[in-house]
Length: 237
Length: 352
Image (cartoon, rainbow over all chains, first blue to last red; front, top):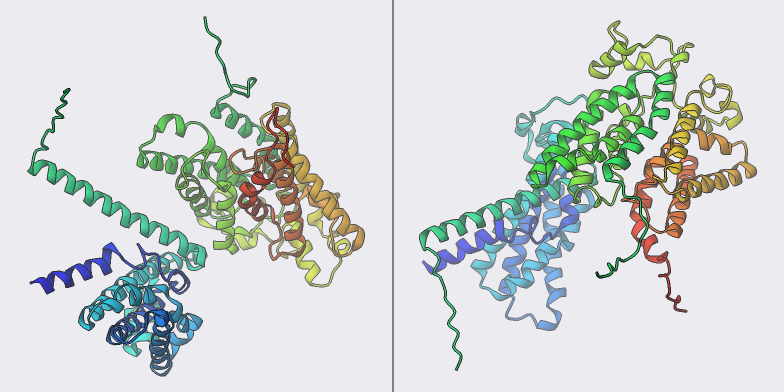
């Protein structure tokens, strides 16, 4: 039971409360740069997810033998190794998406979300939890990427999953949905400034939901237990 | 009886925001009239579309922010923003350009930053730049002055072009833009820029009929209209005289130097003054009390920087006109300029 609660907490932290994209605002550079389409976002999200799981597991495995003084370089080397693996795999199997992600694929090495998790969680916790934490943080990051990619793709060119076959193989070309028919592309949504503005709106929506929930909880609490009136007794001795 | 000790300033014009905004809107009328005379009904239609959108968005945002809706909605600042957007759009741009532009100006640039008095950027110009970056085709489909057009364009024709993209007679925007001789026309600034890349000198390109007899057919009168409105505003003390003067002087000096060095590749100083959005920018955009610098010295630096940037963008940049970009860049520099041009407080020595 205790284990389950811990995993649940990890999931909530990664997906919502401490989401690397929306709350920690880590890894903004790839987040904003490659989310012009859902396909790109999905590609980068998956790559980051895999790297995050791999690096979390490895860091957690070696945590006993890494001296404190040089832990950061060691973490970076581990992450870089995983990024190289992923990059070579994508180069081999999903060449189209590998090309459209360009420099942002190798740049996952510098994604602070990954080294942040290695430093803050994986280097202090056993393998299983670290792996699960990597999965949840990676999913949280990937979800933000995908939502942002969807918003920008719909606004920018009116489609969803344009070019999904580059990532998922030939069958995926049926996934392409034309949501709106736009005569003109809305270039702002595709350009980086549009990403910043859309990101701002996403964070605002998240904060709004949080606030609503807080209010609801407060309301419930006050209904369940009528607030006890505290009287201050003043004694003049 | 006690003395009321008030802090300075002791003498101030007690005019409300609404009165000031009304005055500024009034002052745009000569320029709008010139636009109407030379380019037809397009801009007036765009101004109305933009105004309606701006008011709806303002109402929506104010109620969302739980502000007092009525006084803030009717203070005229949203209307002024919409009027400035409507003026700066190409006359036969489609209707949704005005809608998206003024919605962006009000919702994102103005209200999200905290409403009137809190926006770091000039809403109208930020919206214009957003539109120019997002819809380059629509935002550059400038229509030639009416007298050079192949087809006549009445109020109803303009309205249907804006709403549907075609006149009742079936002419498209592209066709409307063609000149009597059958080629597509651009603005004078655009023509000079394009011709320079084709290896023509400025003097050669000014032989094009779009330049008219003086500097730029139609545009010169529009700019003179805004100049008149601006002088009226200065006379009414609605705007400081420092900003436009410094801006125009800076633009004059920059373009004069360029013209003196190489008259073949640089346009004349008067051409810079009387084409594009120069006068609109000088008197109506840069003087925006919220987003500009605050002290006299600061305004001087601010506007001079804007003039320099306009010249640089027009002469070397990728876009033909640079007022909107220059204004946004100066908006960003505004707080820094204020920081270094703080006026000496009366009675205090400047520390050496």
